[in-house]
Image (cartoon, rainbow, N blue to C red):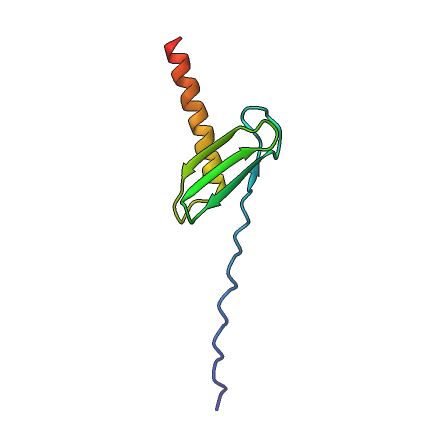
Amino acid sequence: MGKRKSKAKPPPKKRMDKLDTVFSCPFCNHGTSVECRIDMKNLIGEAVCGICQENFSTTVTALTEPIDIYSEWIDECERVNNVEDDEA
């Protein structure tokens, strides 16, 4: 008589790397000066530069991460710059 086969353990889950919460400012180009905060109670995300005091606010969802707020800020800056270039 043989032994019963033991059930193989499932492989361990891969850990997701933490995303950044501080970024470089698009206005003063100072590294790690922009801090992104998410207020889930009021559904507002805010990115603020600690050096030049520039800020950006947007609405957030349950899936929003700080990198999303910063990316929206950069996209909005590019959109405004492109509109100004088209008018000139």
